[in-house]
Image 1 (cartoon, rainbow, N blue to C red):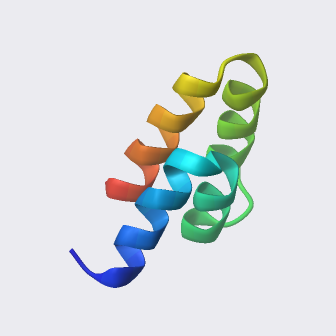
Image 2: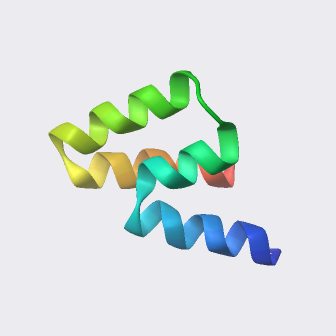
Length: 54
């Protein structure tokens, strides 16, 4: 695991939309993650971890 991936995982736990934006840019994954974070925090974190680690 490289340093950039580690930073993205930490960001995915603390600020999920920021991690998704830095990894994938503006797109469908970012919109889904923002909606998940607005409704519930944990699904947003899980989605961000999935996007960052796949």
